[in-house]
Image (cartoon, rainbow, N blue to C red; front, side, top):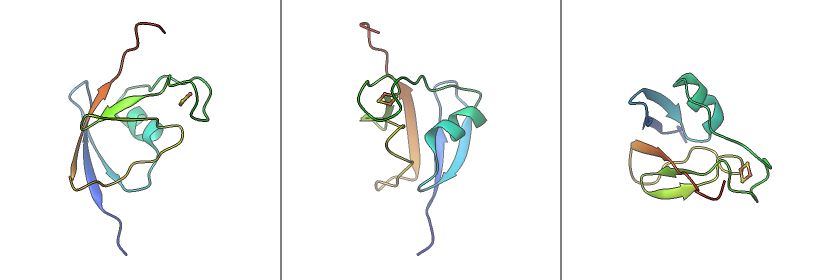
Length: 81
Ligand code: FES
């Protein structure tokens, strides 16, 4: 099955195109953004971003299609970090 092409709208208003399964960190880099990291195995939450309002941990989840070709990204900011 052909992978879906998705449009990613980043907080700095840049747009990148991605396919399902691609790496969030790489695509953020292409938009001149850096997703913060900590543990890199899903436990600390440092890398969390909001994808169309849903919190995702990019270190354990690649880009996925969920009934919307446009992914609006917000960086979460945790006041305790
Ligand atoms: S870097 Fe720790 S949860 Fe992603």
